[in-house]
Image (tube, rainbow, N blue to C red; front, top):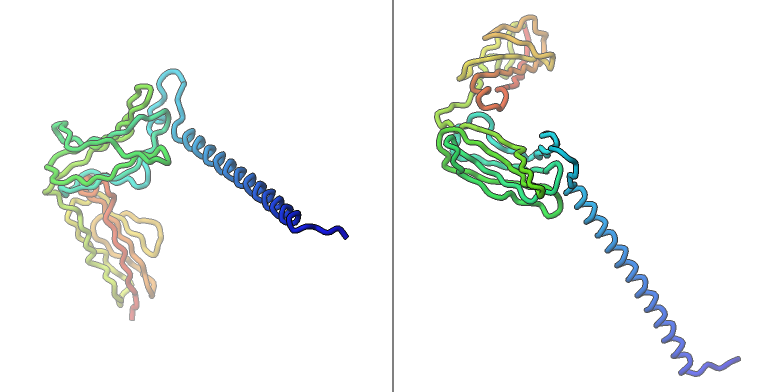
Length: 257
């Protein structure tokens, strides 16, 4: 049997350790290279998705330039009696390299009462705004978003006008009948009051189709048991605000003798 000296044994251990360290270093370098390549790929992809350069001749259609307003859209519609309003939204330009986007709010005299460069997300092409305007005077206000492109093109994807009227009264629907109670008859009146001129009124009984009716009316031939009545009223004030109709749901029971 060959006798291995302590020095030789130690050298072998050091050689194995050095080889192990070298292999581990190679593996770590490969991991770093792969991670770097993935990061570079994601950055390039994000840049490509966010900034698609338009080299086509002529002017694209307004629809292609409009971009996308996000679901966080919050701008007063129609008429409001509030002198403090919130404007909040995100915006994705549709095509081209965008240098920056701005927003402005002008009054009836076309005087700018607020405006600034919109904030830009560092991880996407989204531009966003969240502003609260205070002490607004009665009159029309126009909110505008303007996108400025690298090729000199200027696009206005958003141009919304709302009215501040501190004397405006929102419609309030009050259902007088039926109430949330039990009736001892299979005939129940529909009676309501609303503080604005009525344009349309509809009802739906037990989730059936909507039925138009004019003024007050009577539901006849109701079956015994629980019923669900939905009433929807559209007024001139609703048309001014742009917020749809006034609606209520009432649950009542019929138990004739």
